[in-house]
Image 1 (tube, rainbow, N blue to C red):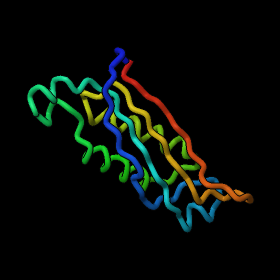
Image 2: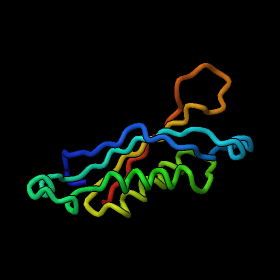
Image 3: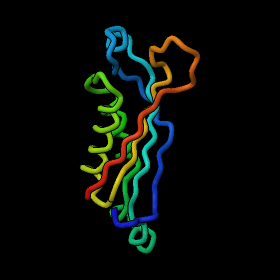
Length: 124
């Protein structure tokens, strides 16, 4: 990343996925909540008011939903990585992306609010 200060954030994208280590997680599924922060220079887009010079957050949301509802993975680390790589692959002006995948229904025998993993991927 080139020290780019601008960010576009999508927060709380909800989708049902079938990720987890246990058979019942893959069978029954559960809700996953995803946050995406894209790091980029928004100066060209703001100067021209052209969508082609920024990221398309509708496409990013589509990438998130495609990964979360798609192929089951054991780990949310893998889910977050696949989302991050998809964003970088489909959004050429993105310098870096941070993805947090929340699994509030994780099979934990304790009272808890959330389990989440955050990954940061960049073009560098």
